[in-house]
Length: 314
Length: 323
Image 1 (cartoon, rainbow over the protein chains, first blue to last red):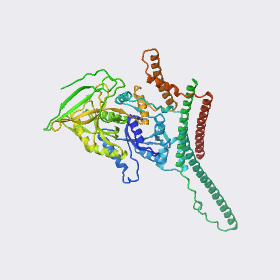
Image 2 (tube, rainbow over the protein chains, first blue to last red; image 1 turned 135 degrees about the vertical axis):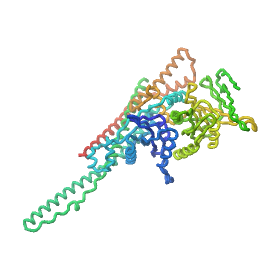
Image 3 (cartoon, rainbow over the protein chains, first blue to last red; image 1 turned 120 degrees about the vertical axis):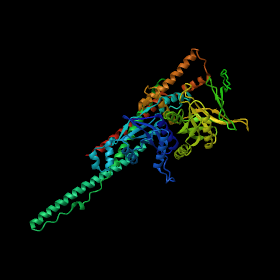
Image 4 (cartoon, chains in turn yellow, brown; image 1 turned 90 degrees about the vertical axis):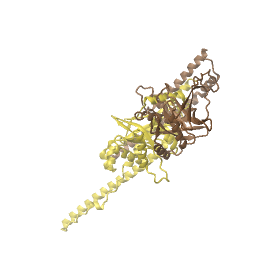
């Protein structure tokens, strides 16, 4: 289970604040060490965003230079993962899967930290760490995304990512810093967490959910046509074989040589099975949205009841 | 020569109290360099007095301080302090420090060596990510300003127009972590002995909203003995927030009790705030409130139901496909 240090948390927040005001994601690399059964994340640095006019910009080179420089100042420069910001929880995508797979392939323990700025602005830091399950790793390795392949591995959308709990650990010096900050800085005047307005957030979440469900239904339709085609083809093959046999029997009874066995597979080319990976991703994404919505509503219910109690005194 | 002054009685207006002036002579070479360090100590001031300092206000983001503490903890063996570059933006009246990185340096009795190449490289890399940040100064851990600081400051004045120097006392020499900022100014008799004086600037901490929330979470770690804290979820967060508001209410109530029993003199401005507070709870007729509450609860329940339904649907779909 990963342990992150406060510097990382603050840096990620700051990076999003400064660079990611649109709906684009911001990304960066996590550095740290693996200690016993814990993964310690001690530093991070952000990735510049891809701009169109920066075609000769080499990401790998940037990374290498950063790590080299950090090594000079005794900062752990071991890659342990990467982080990404998300918009209302929509991060389960092909790109994420590929990146995480390549990271995890190289380093066993890597995680992807998902930072949800909108949820954080509502009052509580939303930072989650995910890792691909070993089953999913195997499938990605094989690159076998057909239905049969997935059936073999018996993967459901719930088993794609496993969430890893995060613990924030402070050194003594940082604790002193915290005392100092508390002393000197003004009291927070915004208690966003107790905000009662929820319709805006719910609307957007539901909108995204609906889009995904639409995608999902399209995908399902595709799959249905595929299986229907497949079964129709089976039937046709069956019929053809039967007719062949009948003809052969007739010919034999008439004393003619039987017709040669033709290659059926060439005649009935099996339809292309649609890749199931996208379906899996969509299902996972829908699941994520639903989870978020449920969390949000449960919090709001609590707040509403509190407001009721407050009114009751009047 | 040491001159001291005693703090007088604290007044509402600005007070400058000079407690220590130390003059250190550096190795002079004809021109003669005199470095003058002026420390101004606020002493015991009531909460309404201000330090009148000249120059812009320095606003620091907590991420910078966390980075500085972190690099101090990772310093090389034998190094007593760490230095690094400060990045940020400059405004008309304030300088906002938003980022920093440490620079390797060697310091001995009579010389100091800073890896300039490294500093330049790092700055270039950082600029790629956040093009709005510029070098605005440098930081050093440790309580005092030494002669070497002057030299380093000179270097940085080549990079930025008027660099600020931030000291963070991570060795906690005075029992507290003093975070101060300075700007250099020329002083002395022109033509003859010229010197450099570091004048302090007032330091404030600013946060983005989300940063504030992050810092709040980190604050909670200082309570637990193992200094660790998991990220809470769901209703426990709401409960925590409510508990905090409750704490604040108890403080306010205690104050009111004191005023009523005559222990503390009533302050009109505080009274006005209290009036605002009580009036903020809107008086709505019970019926209307019931309606609003119920409709809101209905909305939330409906959404929960829908999401549960969707989840069941995709799970079912999954199982069917795998048949």
